[in-house]
Length: 361
Image (cartoon, rainbow, N blue to C red):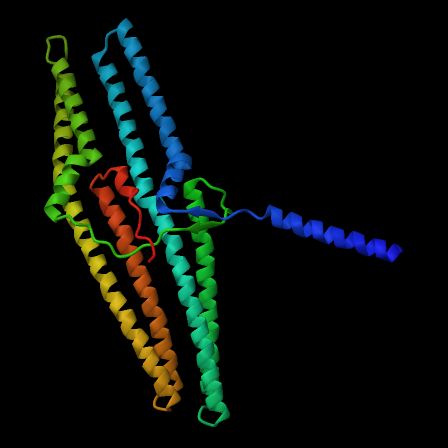
């Protein structure tokens, strides 16, 4: 009776422990890119710091307006207003950076390593298949012990590459959770994917859009106007020649800064535009190369079975196929990331960042 009672208690304890462990398992969070951007803009810690600075500068501006009623100081008031506007620019720029670069980059990295894990898993299975073929040939006397050793080393290397890809995927998921302000160990499942999409915009249109929207130009224009105001206020008999000279130099400095931006931004956009087009072309080329390597590997398998090529030739063909698939994946990742960064360089609105990626068909 005591044994029976003890057995029942143990069984109940095991059942409760099993139920408890299942109950404590975190639910997988499904995330689209659009949802990730929304979550990141709400929770990202870096953005919160910039938001606090914006609130501080707004408060200082309000304080300056009150003080100006008691003791008029146009320069102090204008300086506080300019600092507030700069904080607004910084806040909007940080939001664009998060949406179009940081969050997108982390999201794409998870997608990339998920695909890479699959590629490496296929490589492991191919290596196992190759090892079996070599062992069969060895049993028939058509392959040497060295051939078997080469195939075994190939399998070990493929297994190591898979472990590395799995580790990278784990870190990529943690990095995504971090930038979104989510628990680092929260399991996530991404619902979007990326494909090769090209921007329908010319270089001339890109430069014009950047010149109209880049916050640096707007900020430099504000600083220039402030310098003009300070100089105008010093054009009187009560201001020393030294102070007027300093105001004139400051004005020239702001004029030079704006002129520099007007030249540097078109150069930046041109470089970024050409780089994007290069990455798009590379993604197309690597995809065709992977298709060619896939067909070459099929032929190599048939040739090896027929005894027309060596074990080394077969293993090299399989390695080249795996590398070609990885090259295709990385080229696609780089093209997509470059596309989002290019949109940001144009001063694109956040609506651009919330465009859904192409759903898998």
